[in-house]
Image (cartoon, rainbow, N blue to C red; front, side, top):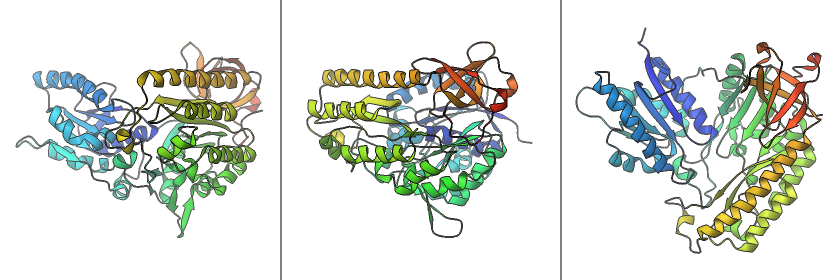
Amino acid sequence: MTEAKKLFVKTYGCQMNVYDSQRMQDVLAPLGYQSVDSAEGADMVILNTCHIREKAAEKVFSDLGRVRKHKEAKEASGGDKMIVAVAGCVAQAEGAELMKREPMVDMVFGPQTYHRLPEMVARANRAVGRNRIVDTDFPAEEKFDHLPEQVSKQGYSAFLAIQEGCDKFCTFCVVPYTRGAEYSRPGADVIREAKQLVAQGTRELTLLGQNVNAYHGEAPNGGEWTLGRLLRELAEIDGLDRIRYTTSHPRDVDEDLISAHRDIKKLMPFLHLPVQAGGDRVLQAMNRKHTNADYRDIAKRLKDACPDLALSSDFIVGFPGESDKDFEDTMEIVRDITFIQAFSFKYSPRPGTPASAMELQVPEKVKTERIMRLQALLAEQQLTFNQNSVGKEMDVLLERHGKYEGQLVGKSPYMQPVHVSGLPESALGQIVRLKITEALPNSLGGELVDATQSDQKSERNVA
């Protein structure tokens, strides 16, 4: 039996990175690596990075400084070598700079190459010389083909990557350069992995992709499945009670997907659909290839198909050339559509993206004023939605212990954390019917309606 080794993985950014980190652990498990909660004393440390946020690389270098102390302490005490790796999108975009600035890093590899981790570890552990490894190829198909078929247990809610990469080339975004071209996993592989997770206790699956609704995977009997068709197939899996997907692009919302929101009761009535901005001039400069009117029409058709559907979105404020009128168009679309959750950011240039070289960069003071106004409106909408939930009944999947003794916390159909007291430990993993009694800015409180109504597996979630 292989001697156990300690593996610490720190995950930055999106849900796709969470999924990738889990699969890295699956890849390394046959080598004897077991996950731990700290870099201290670890045999291997992986920083799985994200390049979306501002100053992403600097945050990685800051964390590497802390890891260096653990590495030096371990080796000074006579322990085995600690392998230090940087993975993900910062590694993909800035691998050479990482190696140059931080000599103690042993491995740098992109998000499409972690299936080759066993080979990289073997090379890094060779006794002769210092073997530093950079692997930043783009073989998405090869990666999924070579990952272990068996997936480790994730819990009552789990992520499942079905699509990767992006062909949209928004002018502000590095994803096409760090994740590569769009690739969809074969439908049979997705169904197999979903069934494995359900057999291990998962009741809610979130399908992941940079543009998840661009999914066009190979069908088991030839041809292609759209995301709508894949959702219908997944809904037939016994024991899978809830399905979500993220992140979507407005350009890839088709009639098949809209009808899936109408027909599939297991598909949660909550959709993250980034608009990014409300001004058509800005949307064009972003290369979004949809207009304000397009987005409004898509939102209307989705809500017509599923009247209890609620949306969340992403917003970028202060994109180069954004005028006062452009920003007011963003405020107007928020007021008209309403979003129950949102991620909003001030524009910051990403090296190598077209927008970073654009003229008419918006002054920082103006961006700050605009983001404060937008976030105040979005926070008001989220609080209002939560307050309007009071008195309603919702099916809540209980997932973990709460902050207080005897408290359990679950997820509503709309991704709101809901806490409830007085239920036994055995209620974890169950879907219970709760009456919402309290609304806070970021969570809800509830009480059990009736024990006989718990675990209603296929209801449409909200009364």
